[in-house]
Length: 388
Image (cartoon, rainbow, N blue to C red):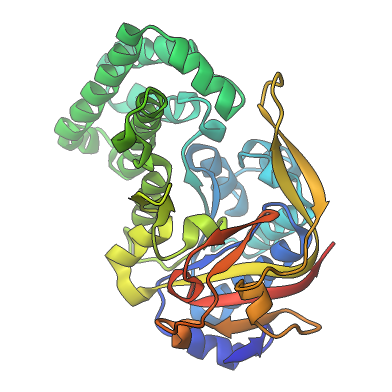
């Protein structure tokens, strides 16, 4: 079944009773993909009562974006877009339009899904925890200050630079940070009744989740150091996607319906294969394990045009550069070659193709491909004819 984005009755049937809907993209910051996202988000909010939008961006930073869209922060949109989203996602006109639309409604929550600070620092999450504890548990501030001291030593504005600095940090200091984070998490759990009595009940879930994400970023870095040292079992530990799945769980704690915007490779329903040896769960496979068919995944790709992609850039602070390149014609066996080419965005239900031996076996990722059974990975595909 293939339909247009404006066929709301058909979309409603395709999405059924979904409680979480993922809207993907084969590359970030692409105008046409963000237009598809905006169209689908409005449909999900206005027609199917979804009440939270979560982007592949830092959770702690997104708390400010949530206050803004709810009318509780009067800063300029440019400030919110820069400081309330990570990875530079707030710099596109389409994302700013989406935030403005959310603010015009005032009744839809906004959230980041991800670990803090482009994966380069614990500090935004720990700062949120510190503000909460200053009100309900001032005695814990000495632990917070110790965590700050260790975390600042390797914090960097970019992921690869932070990993390099963390790897060069003395093992004893890395271990001390891990121990402090664990002790603080235990303290918060143990003293929760006191926090609630002191008026800190409403903020506990948010502060607790921020601390959990700080713990997970620390564990991600530890696993990466071990993997770089040759530990295969650590290479298969995808902490980042597990953290995003925990954020979805946090956002749904009151039964709210959540729409997620993230890369296709995070949202796919099945794990990725690492080196043909390890199955690595991603956000979507966590959600399937928890929600089953209440999770619907919409992959988004394109037939032709130009796409951003990444290339190594040794000697630079970020370690990578973003280039815009022409897309090659769809490869044989890909979902882009499998589906008919239209003049507008078409949404196709892939579920009837599951188990079919002649179904598509690859999909675009940046300017390359991921090889896997596409109908198992996605429920629906929104295919864009051309990217500019």
